[in-house]
Image (tube, rainbow, N blue to C red):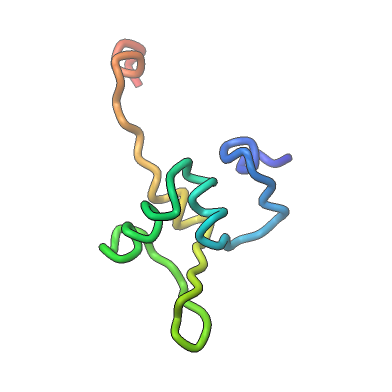
Length: 79
């Protein structure tokens, strides 16, 4: 497993893009959250298919979307 695989708990298998379900699992959120973030423009995706219904997400875009949320533990540790 690579470091990215251990972050997400899924085997990326060298993939640079993920479908909605895998992107949600990678970020630890629901598929609905991924779809909402795409619709509101806070997360980029690539649409495929005749109607553009299938969405693919670059792993690099998913990593860029991650934000450290301060908690009491991280504040006390000075992170």
